[in-house]
Structure formats: C-alpha cells, structure tokens
Image (cartoon, rainbow, N blue to C red):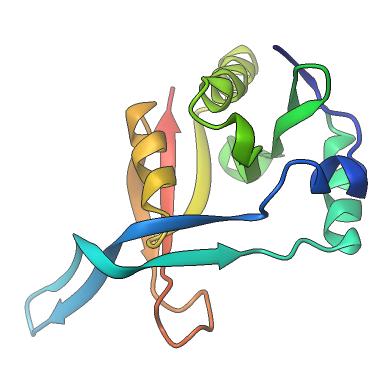
Length: 179
C-alpha cells in the first residue's frame, strides 16, 4: 500500500470503496444539564438494541467539491492496486488548522492499518507546515470512528447538538489532534 497526494477523485473510484457510511451498535448519548451556576454536557456510551446504519449518499456534486479542495495538495489517497481510502483536508489559515472534511477507508479494507497510515500522513503534513492542530467532525452514532480517532491521539473538543436534522438522534462531535 502507498499513500499519495490525492489530486482528483472520480465517481467510479468513490463507488468502488463500497458502503458510503457506517454501522454501529453503540451511541454516545448527549445530555445537557443547566442551572443558574453551570451548563454541563455529558456523553455517555450506551449499547443500542439495533445497529445504527448511516448512509451518506455522496453525490457527483459532492465529489466535484472534493476535487476543488484537492487542488491545494492537502488531501491523500491510499492505494493498493486501486484507491482503497482517502482523506480530504482543507488548510484553515484563520486558526492555523488542517480540517479533515472527509475520511474514508473501503469497507473491505478496514482494520488493516490503512486509516492509521492515512492519518499519519495528515499529521506529518500538519507538522511540516507548522499547523497547530488537525480537526474533524463525526457523529455520536459513529462510535467505531470516535474510538479510532481517540486511539490515534485525537481528543473530543466540541459538541453541537443541532447540526443534523434527523429526529435528534445524531449529534456532532468535534475532535482535534494538537501538535
């Protein structure tokens, strides 16, 4: 496997990665407790009765947007004999960060170290550019991703309870890796 700067992505390459989403049997439930003296957010890991399945349904327009972002040279692809994963990253000068807007490893290729290699390349890029942190957003229902990012040294640094409109199930979890 090799990791290279990703310069473009086709709809076919994207579709060859398999399921555009994730499945989890757990959730980090978010609760909010407020009183006159405090505001307390709490994430509690709980098992689900049924697996939660998320389908992102990435469109051709989304891929066009990714290709526009890739022009800056901060995105990477993982290749065997074909593309098996990628990370779309944007440099944010205003806060000296590298934002990962999309991170995908082929469903068939997960648990083989590909995601770790991709993230290693992103962190190496950020260090070389003297960027202060790498950040991303995931969902409280994507427990496998949260645990993966934590294993690599990312910390939960923010929450947004109303980013998604799906009966209140999904909440946004922001994570950062500080250099």
